[in-house]
Image (tube, rainbow, N blue to C red; front, side):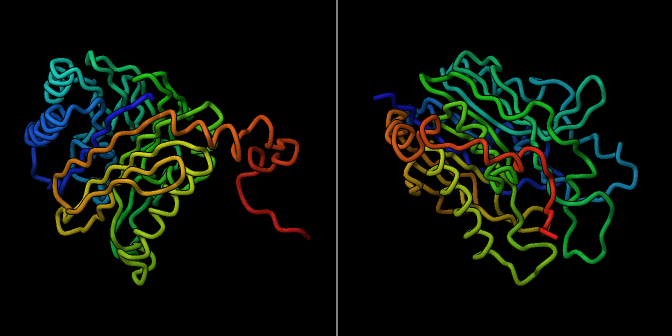
Amino acid sequence: MRNVRVAAAQLGPIQKMDSRHAVVARMLDLMRQAKAAACDLVVYPELALSTFFPRWYYEERGDADIWFEREMPGAATRPLFEEASRSAIAMSFGYAELTPGGHHFNTSILVDKAGAIIGKYRKVHMPGHVEYDPARTHQHLEKRYFEPGDLGFPVWRMLGGIVGMCICNDRRWPETFRVLGLQGVELVVLGFNTPSVNSQRSAEGLDRRMFHHRLTLQAGAYQNATFVVAVAKAGVEDGHHCMAGTMVIDPDGEIVAQSATEADELVVHDCDLDATRFGKETVFDFARHRRIEHYGLIASQPGVVPPL
């Protein structure tokens, strides 16, 4: 049995006025709860250090740089790394990354129990739009402020297993999970900030959004025989509601743990990574069953091309 006790550390709303230090204090409180629960890994949401700023339009894109981290750890975030090391607990969290070369990414990191960064992922599937759109009920300007990730979908050996990362909208794309699955992933961690209403279809509210959320996570877990830990930033941020839905999915695609609130909340579950073996050795034994000679369109054609 290769057990990893995971703490999915949901964050309630972070307002525009909240400082990094105030947010980190909340994250530290959740980490200490995770330590008290004897957890091995604590997972925080996408853009865990700030409000979901892509809902705000800055005419000068550089004005949004106030939300980006130029170093990791920095002065505000170093206490997280120090506490992780003291507590011997691994962690993952998302943040806005501004590289020394001036590139902007929606990023997530893996930190080991010694407090060292061992893995980095940059969000690949960027949703939303570039320019202000008055027809939308709210703005979703990720394409304005972030570049698509340039690191692909790597995995890392950690905590006795194989761990991968993705972020928010990545979960909607089966290619995300399959590329991770082809590397033997056993635990996928992801954070998300998801509005409870579709900005382009107001009738698509919380129930349907949550249905799609569960559907993508459960399909990705089952079809790749992996645990998935998905962690929300939830509640009403600056007048905009984000859904919760923090949950752990097992390799059979079952929801085995989930949040009950839209506030700061710890969801703890024991993930036996050996439970991934049955699916990987039977229905989803890729080496025996995949037929890559028929999959060329997936990697060669970005859009739909109907027959003539």
